[in-house]
Image 1 (spheres, rainbow, N blue to C red):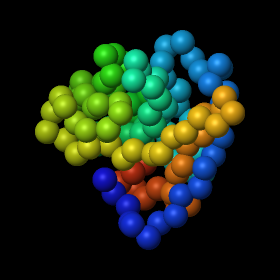
Image 2: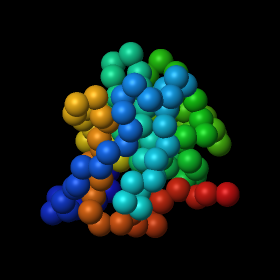
Image 3: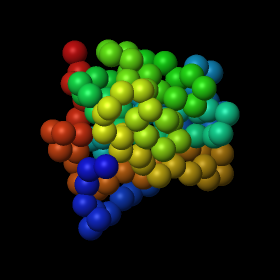
Length: 122
């Protein structure tokens, strides 16, 4: 994971839990960060919406059986941990997520993402 231990994070509202898309994923831009929120059988998770292989947006891929699949080359990552399980790539940056009063909130760093943490958007 990239980042500094001295960075602070701030919580941001994403949306109401009841409004979460049926397809099980939601891409959001939060304080400059590209965030992918996913729902699996184990609950909700939030990761940087950027494949660590070719910097593609993971939100264009599929979420199946607790994994996120990159649409570009098929790299797979565990949704809950960000751990790469389908390829020899770095793990995804995870963001803390909580549900408070039926609202999904994600904590992202106060510092903007660096070039190595921004996806390539076409």
